[in-house]
Image 1 (tube, rainbow, N blue to C red):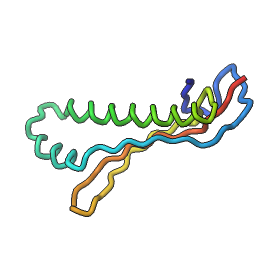
Image 2: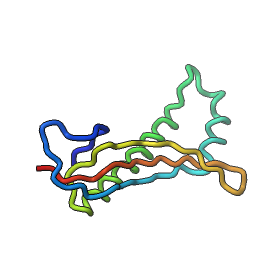
Image 3: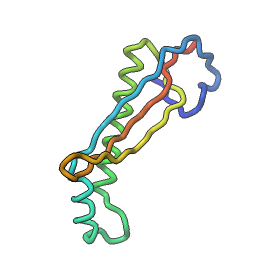
Image 4: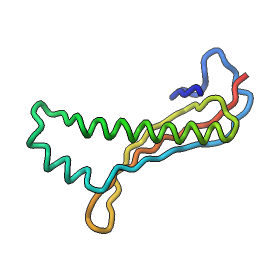
Length: 108
């Protein structure tokens, strides 16, 4: 599966637009509380465990998007966009959603 943030794949012709595809992953409600509680333990401004969690969430969202494209018979996803969104939940906590989206296409 070819993924690109561009509107096409160099050297390949789009023969069919299969539709919009997306994938989402949500990080747990305590990530922000845990992050700010643990920030005093971070020297140098980086929090490796949280970077790892974000990377895993991003990879999960991309894999789900790719599976949706495969289900449509696509062999590439163009115009890929990745968004991060904080979601406030009813108990006053927050969750972080990572969403990947793009256009599934078949190439010549």
